Image (cartoon, one colour):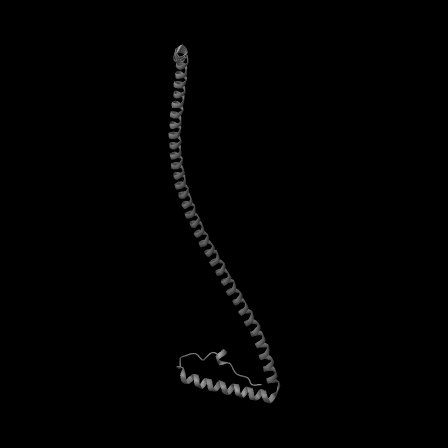
Length: 184
């Protein structure tokens, strides 16, 4: 039993020493550690709140940027459509102008060709008519018959014109309608 009492007494001394010298620094270390953990937990909570606020701000900014981008894109599309419409109008006007200029050039060239053809045809007809008249008048018998026929036609026309025109009117002028036909 002495041993038991000595062991209990030794155990109590260890407990008192632990209670007096070991436990207060251990409690102080635990308290300071708890305070550090509490401070870190508070900092973590504040950091989380700041992160959530920053994320909300970022999402808001992103949404605003997306809206602004959509507005800019819509404006660019509208401006591109306007420019495209203007270019189409200008291209159509240019095409119309070129087409009209081409029509005018074609009309001028056609008129020039018609004048040239008339001049060439007139010269050829005059040459052919003079040759036919020269050949026709070369023969005396033909010449007399042609002159008689021309005079007869003139008398017939004069008689027809006198019957259809009033007395005060001028005599009929000779022209392409009144030309004499020459047989070869």
